[in-house]
Length: 207
Image (cartoon, helix red, strand yellow):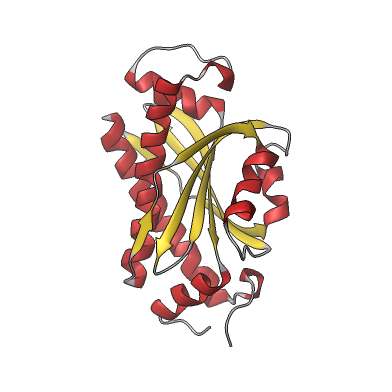
């Protein structure tokens, strides 16, 4: 029986998604260290299967301003990865390349965003490559698009761009240590219904 909603996943399927999150976060930390040319450590990520409507509460509430990076997935599976970072993460990234005081997200310029987009590109690719390798599938990703806005508005983007978003999403709470500074970020995996079935079939799991 095909999965009609991610909320219907069993323990084995959830374990697979958790493993994807763990492997992806480790690969993301390695890729980030290469980009920044500095040591990057990552704690074991906290991975949750949550209602999409509740995601904003993990990100400071719908009115909290944040920087979102969206990457569309296509190929053997269709979906989106949404990375949300706060001012502190963006400031640390930017100051790794050049010194700049960032008091708020409004201080971020287009040049600054190019740094953040490059980070989003390599970290998202690390997660996507982990999925593709584990499932032996092809996944293409689009360049990251940045959105400095209220969390509620950022979270509306997947619903506007995907035709069959489920009620539940995989939320990965990341904690990086970059040159001695602890930084938090959030990665959200959103797959269309049919793509979830394809993924589990390729992983050899019942659907």
